[in-house]
Length: 529
Image (cartoon, rainbow, N blue to C red; front, side, top):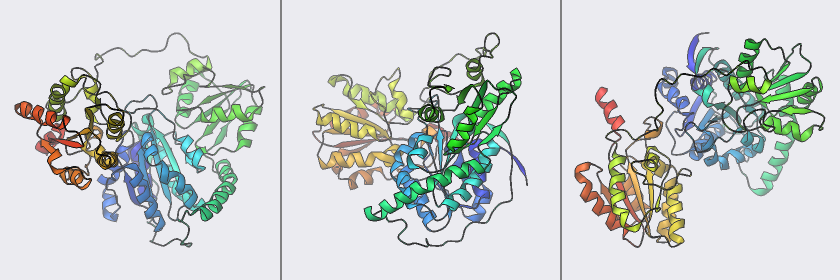
């Protein structure tokens, strides 16, 4: 046994390695990125030749992890919460196929939207798919539950979700390791038809999944991860899920509270466990990070005589992260005003780095499109999304990965001309290529600007699958050779770049402008190294 100081993400990664992981598959997305990066840096992983390359998107990541599970090995797919939307197709169907080797799906949620378009709660995906969900409340639990999760997956032959949130993913604590387990040997599924979801087979598998659900509830009841902590109080009980358990404990210690607590770290939760708990108190406060999953289920199955407090009745805010101050207020134990943090540094909005190629691209685009009027540029998710802010004010949308191209096509179909998409190189290979193919097949009058910085810049500079391949990819998708243009976004090339963009804006068909210049931060890192 050894002790390490780890981020929550790193605790998941180390737990997976010590559980006999053979491969991790992921697309970088905050707050999940550090899981895969830790495994990529790990000497333990290199010594065992654990697969740890980035995937082109979350869907391909989960499908590859499922393929490794098919071969009997333990695998893990990691993504942020909105990445699970991309992977939803294999995620839902993997619950029907089941697994062979243990398969974990790690979803890192981002309540308060620190770096995300929304703050959806991945536990609902787990409920939707009817698979086990594990929600650690600490770095030690992140390590332990990851190890437990692989065993749970192989016991029930189902994928298992690990759900973490930003505060746990990006905070550090001491973690005690257990002895590492050997990897599984490669082995084909005992039933070679297990992964075939023809309707006749899928109907049988769905019945099997339904019949397993009660067993999953019993497992959560007996595992010890959902446990009752008795208190002397009889009026109020607290149900604390995942990280929210820590917030309650901090408040309880500060104010010497002794409420009975039902700590939840495993889903589905057995109804009897909930029923017995609420029957023993007069009112229940439900503390959960994200959406009111447990609170909603309590309000749906219990009689109106039960008093349920939480996010749905206004005791806690409906949006954003929880914190000890919010819990204090909800429980009615706040004394005086909450502690305020003094303003040390004035808030300032995020900005593109000095010397960033996106800056010169936006300056050229703004000048080239000025004659057509505003509101014609659809954008995507990446550093270049900051083009929405002053002084550029250059883009008009940011919805999801790849949506710039398809939205531009839809606007063109509605009669908008010109219709422009701005997308990054990594985002383009993630989910922009299919939209471009749609545009090519219909000869849509759209101009796609791929702002190529040769890396996945927004999440720290991970490998981009597009590097050195964009011209060939666009040609392979059917864009006419003369309308795949490359420009270098530098101040000295401004007039030339404006001319290139103007020419392609005027084209009554599909055109692609590749604005190609390496990320300034990656250049600096190379110089230092």
